[in-house]
Every structure is written in structure tokens, then in C-alpha cells.
Image (cartoon, rainbow, N blue to C red; front, side):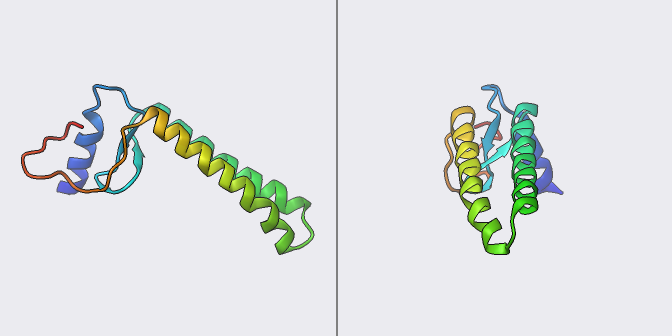
Length: 104
């Protein structure tokens, strides 16, 4: 439970108001505010609805994939762009280092 408590404390310590904070483990971001969670929910909804829309109009699996993949790539690029604009600069890290507090 200590890792979960550390992670929650890390996300709460957000005086800059970042929508996305860098991940404590690995590279990338995690939503830190309601705006970040909303962006992520909209992203998931768009991917899901777009896949169902394309699948219902397709006649084969390859037809579906040919249409889904490029549009999904566009959505992923847009999500990464939003994360860069509203989040911390990402870097590779593996937890908080000794002497480092839960602030960014």
C-alpha cells in the first residue's frame, strides 16, 4: 500500500496545476486533475466509438483495420500533444529517489 499512498500524495502535490504529471515508474504521464481525467475519458470514448462506427460500415476485417489504424494514430498523437502542453516534462524514472520529496 505504500506505493499507492506515495503515488496519490505525488499527484496531490501539484502547485503548478498540471493536468498530467510524469509517471513515478516508467516514462510518460498520468492524469493528475479532473481535466486530465476528462481528456483521457474523451480519448477512450473517441477510440471506442470510432472503432464501432467503422466496423459497422466495413465488409471485412482488413477493411476495418485499414480505416481504424490511421485514425487511432491521429487520436494518439493528439493525446500526446495535449499531455505535452498541459503536463510536466516527461522523463524516465523509477519511483522517488532518496532525498526527493513528492513534489515535482
